[in-house]
Image (cartoon, rainbow, N blue to C red; front, side, top):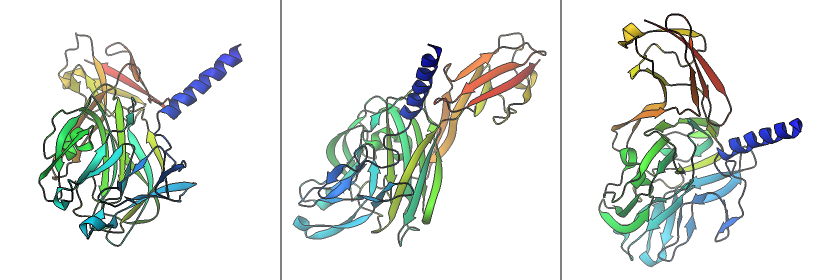
Length: 363
């Protein structure tokens, strides 16, 4: 009987760890179709299917393991308008959309709606990429993770000529990421963004290269939704067809979410202990006098993680203050002032690691 219980416990842990990764993170399920092109089932590629045109920007390619996803900025012809344009190559767990009011090219706008149900709080997104093209030094590629709670809504979005085109959307990327890529035409009903990890660079990678994207936190608590966007060029920084270069391409494979068991910042009765070493499991000594904390009162210990800043599309810095670790992740075994250490145990959310801090508080 004990063996059966242990087996179930191990299987349960495995299922939990698997559930905290993105669906089809190795990009092997290509049983979907766009016209005659294979498409991923769990992920969606940008496409054009308006004004008589049907183009996709996501393709199946040989990967570093099995298949990989390939997205590329691509010149497209729109027969009804008798003109060509360059469309953004990107993929997402949410639904890429594009909208043109009638045949008015100046009204063109695009974006991404929605994502997947999600309740986890990863610390890093690791992605294997190759990036090719003749103009990789002229536009950024993007690796983006964000999560949120609530429902965002708006009825207008920035178009090709800088104006606003009316089209109603729910949980549109720019109505969630207000601090870094906010809807310049205004958000009618904002959501509550929980986290964001955003890497962008003007670079070429001819060989497979792993990039690790830190994920920062704007709020405590767990999200209810998340989305990921991988873009070959200037999306989401550009809302329409400006600043795109035909042929700039991004290969993506083997995405992994990493969960940490470290504390970024330790708070003692509301005061940050700047002498705290997040990497050490050796005994550390904290002077309450130097912290200006009353030694006669009970100590309140809090750990924070996911702290940092990101530049928004205007080059301004958006600050992420981090989130407090909850009692599922962090436990504190109280010690005795000037004598016995406090033991702080932190477990990674997916059960992959544990970190134990030993803090001796002195008056």
